[in-house]
Image (cartoon, rainbow, N blue to C red; front, side, top):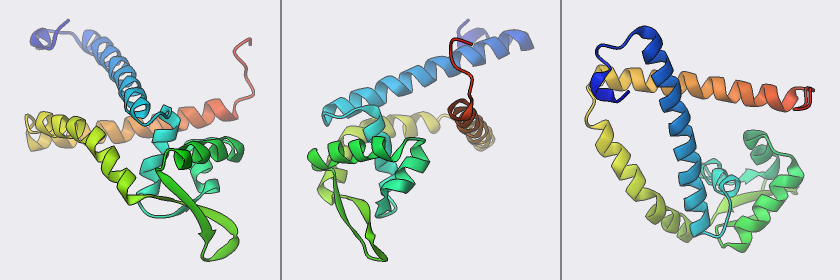
Length: 164
């Protein structure tokens, strides 16, 4: 079913199509982030750390909490980002026992070169929508993101294994 013939679709057909389109979009997003990470010699999880650092220095504990990783896993992420010249570690000015991680400005420029074409393409796509449609898209994305975060948390906290 293409978007051309959605007008005559039943609600059930539309729900199935939306579910499929969301699945494809999710897969495409993962593939895009993997490709971008490869440009830096990193993995997608490493790259997911970068937006967390845009607001300034952050502790490894906050990174772990935000990404749902252990502090040990985050230490490895930070090691790779530091080796790639993307971040630097320094003592927390408020608590010298803690270490904070900060983006290196030149690395942000390099990331911008990789992400800008996709960002520009998406902004061009957004221009095709009326204000009410944009509000609907925003609401959908916000609600879908909340569900994804809730379900990821549920999976991490669940004692159920794949064998059960």
